[in-house]
Amino acid sequence: MSRTPSLRTHLMLLQVGIVFLVISVAGVVATMIQADSIRDAHQDRLIGVAESVARLPSVIEAFDDPDPAETIQPIAELIRQASDVTYVVVTDAAGTRYSHPNPERIGELVSTDPSVPLSGEVFVGTEKGTLGTSWRVKVPVWSDEEVIGTASVGVLESQLTADLLERLPLLVAWLIGAAVVGTIGAFSISRLVWRRIHRQEPEQIAELLQSREALLHGVGEGLIVTDAAGTITLVNDEAKRLLGLETEVLGLRADAVLEGPVAKLLLDPTEDEQLVLAGERILLAKPSGGTVAGSRVGSMLLLRDRTELHAVLRDLSGARDTTQALRAQAHEFSNRLHVISGLLELGQTRAAAEFIGAVDTSGSPTGAAALASVGDPELGALLLAKGAICREKGIELVIDDESALAPSEPALGRDLITILGNLLDNAIEAIVHQGRIELLVSEEADASVLIEIHDDGPGIDPALHETLWDLGSTSKGIDGDHAARGIGLALVHRVVSRRRGTISVGISDLGGAAFTVVLPPPSGQGRLQVASVPHEGAS
Image (cartoon, rainbow, N blue to C red; front, top):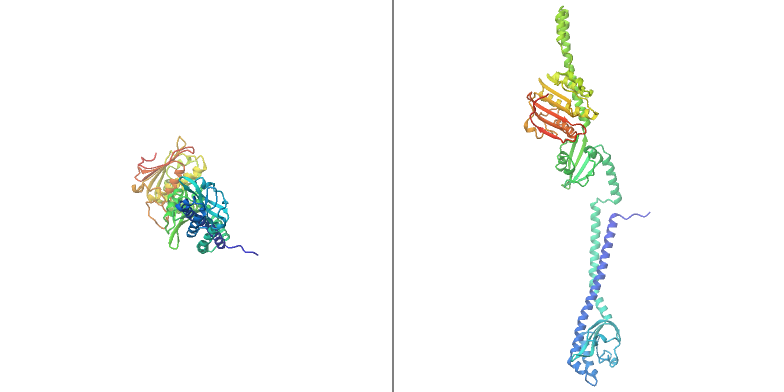
């Protein structure tokens, strides 16, 4: 069974192939350049020798002699030997040779066309003559502005080839050296890449990526990862759901697409878990800074949904408060029954009847008649439960007689429960014991919902007005039962924001805080407004 070559082998073979291809092309180009250089050097020398011969006075004067070859041949041979050329041939205007390396050829017509030099021009080119193929130069011989002959000087092509071959070993040595260096470099680079990918093959990397994707998108927690520059590099499906991300965010800056608290934890991670709000979800976020070899390479944020847990804890807290209130009422009724029993045993029936008539057994908030106008049973149950808690704490919960509301949609009823529950809880906690809360909840003529809550507690510190709606902002201390404060008003703010309503906080006529919320009808297009202004009291 054949084994597939490793990635390192593939990389090395690819790089070696590229190196040898480049070296081969470079060698061919260098050889061509060297050949052209040799040819150009010979051309310059040939032109110089030919023009020197054509201008010699003794050569020009010899044309008038009875036997010009007797004078010209020795001069031509001397110049040929001195200049190391293959031949120096001088002819008359008819093409008859007066000199030649082979004396037997003197007196014969030249074998190539002499028309170019006879026309007064210089010829440079390769032609085949009696000595073979040569690189030659032909120049005219002038006498009193008349061309009387030609001077031809040439070098055999075989000599040019020999000169090139003489220089090739050095070039080949350089090319071999480059090939060796390139091969060593290819081996080193392939090994470096192999080590950088932790000695894994492409198939193994693909399997790891597939496993990672399956793991990250299958876990129940949300996960977001950014690089050192704050760019999102990974986000799983649960994180998209928890953060309400409907568009692709990979490759974007965290602070450009995520809410401020979440982005801050990614860009400036701490080691502590924190509660954050994403829309109206309460998330437990655990940041972690990613470091490799001591340097920070990014950040990771693990998100867990705590919305349902928070709701359960709120319900549990409400049930606990209600239970305590019922216990107190049961204890109080037990005492009253003892008084009635005692009066009856003493025969004080009239006094017993008067005592019974004076006892308030309703346990309802003041103005409970207004509850009949609140058409949502869940809202009514909420107000009754808060009334029982207030009664236990000695707080008078007054529901304005003008309160009247029948939510037109279930979603509005749930939002009103969130708003009223959190605002009433804040008011009760602010008063602690013995106080008064006034509440108005009604539907206005334009179908908008108005909520006003006034208390006679200490009020809101003006210094908190700017951060009042931020998660974690609270004027109350931290104790064991309420380790996660500062969530209620942030949730109220998110709900009002989604409903495009307005919320304001100010000073109540009772001396404490006054919260006013206006929710437009579903078709309303108003923008969220948050104000911190005094309010003149409940209607």
